[in-house]
Length: 253
Image 1: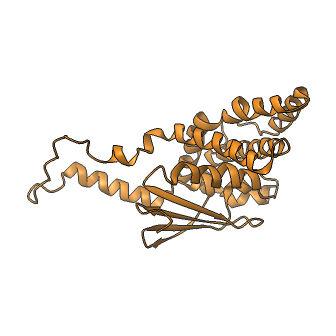
Image 2: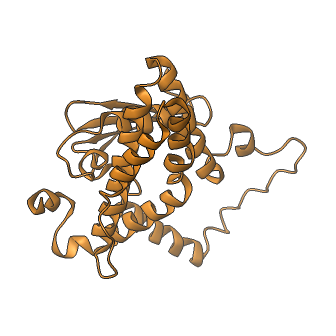
Image 3: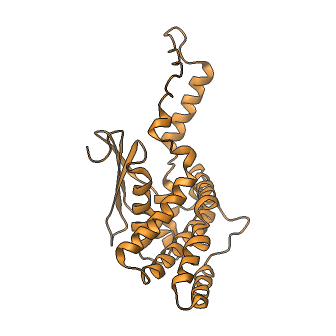
């Protein structure tokens, strides 16, 4: 188990800025979508099951697998324990729900619930195309003249922003390291070993959490609803995945 955990970093890597960013990201993520399992999925499972008590017992059992988070744990260890537990429990509840619904009905149910939770959590970051344009009748903003140029404070902010983008990955907390390349109209990210699978620590791919909780739900949130279009191509039963992101024209172009 210890050797398997090395892929998340050792020594300074467990305390470096990326580890802190990942820990904070997951903490914030859990405040927004963490309750979807006990407050939405599990109650639905209890309703459709013949034995609600058995559902409660099963959920308590999977929750009991959570590792205790200690005060002096590194941010990387705290991230792994929180994220790994969430994915493990998501995989469990999806597996249970799948046994009570037809394939299409199951997918529609779990994807709709998760995509709504993600959309609500990211509402301030997902303005519609209409909100991204100037309202009709509003006075246009006067363009800056060449003589004005960026302010000293503006240049400093740009430098800090560029440094952070070059050294810290905002999606590392979800999928781990990626190989990124620019493609016409967007970017393509190859995820060689997705942390959604490995954070759980059981050596298996988390197929349902991957296909419904990540791919299906994120595509439902972005595609057709925002200026950004996403396509996830998991390589199951491998741990890798390719994510294509296109701006404006969407993936169909």
